[in-house]
Length: 259
Image 1 (tube, one colour):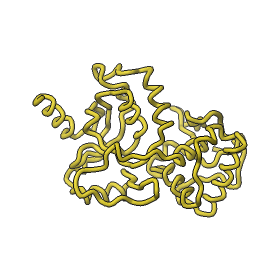
Image 2 (cartoon, helix red, strand yellow; image 1 turned 90 degrees about the vertical axis):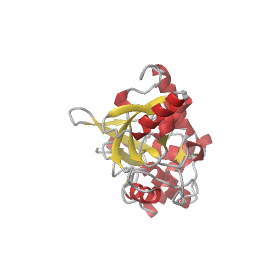
Image 3 (cartoon, one colour; image 1 turned 180 degrees about the vertical axis):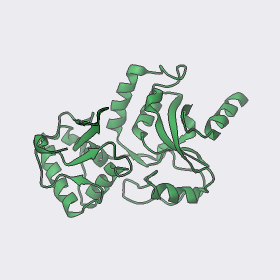
Image 4 (cartoon, helix red, strand yellow; image 1 turned 135 degrees about the vertical axis):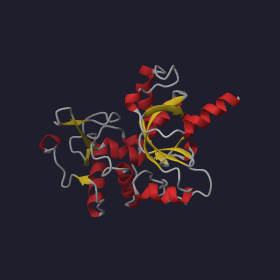
C-alpha cells in the first residue's frame, strides 16, 4: 500500500515537458460537460488497442498524449476529455500526458482565474453558469454533465486539418452518420487557441436562444428533422455572433465551400 502511495506521489509531482504516462487518479477535468455518445465512440476505437501500452496499463499510445497543466491539485486536463473518459470506461490505469504549463506555484484561486483567462479550462455548467472558484480541491469527473448541444456542434461542423504537405483536408465528425450537405460552421483543427472550447460556446449560445438538440433527431445532418434544426441554429448564431466562430451564413453547399 505504501509503495502505491509513493508511486502516485511521484507521478503527480513530476514536471512533464515530455510525454509520460501517469495514473488516471492524478488527472482532473478542465471542463464540466461532455457528450456520452462521443465517449462511447472513442471507447469503441480504443477497444482495438485495449491496454497495449505502458506495460498493459493504457489503451492510448504516447502519440495521443493529452495536454495538461501541472497545478497544486495535480494535472488538469486542457483537451481530450472524451479520450480520458473513454480510457476510464476501458478501465485503464494510466494515460499519456504532455505538460504544457507548470502553474503549481499558484493558489487554487489564482490557478482558476489564470487558467480560464488563458483558455486552459471552461468551468461553465450546462445551465450556462460559471462555477465559483473552488475553495479546496478541484472539480471531479463525477461533476461532469452530458451536453446534447455539444454533440450537435460537432455533428454539424465542417472539420478540416492539414496533411504533412500543408494541404487542407476536410473530414467528417466520427459521430455523424453522413457529411453535412450544408455545414453549420468550419473548424480548423490547427487553430487550437482560437478554437478553444468553441463547441461549448456554440452550445451555450443555442441554449440562450432556447434551442436544445434532442438525441432523437439522430446524427445525420441531412435528415429533414435535423436539417431544419440546423437552420434554426444558423439563424440564432448569426443573430448572436460568437467572436471566433467561422459561421457559414448564409448556408453553403459542402462542395462550394472554399477551405
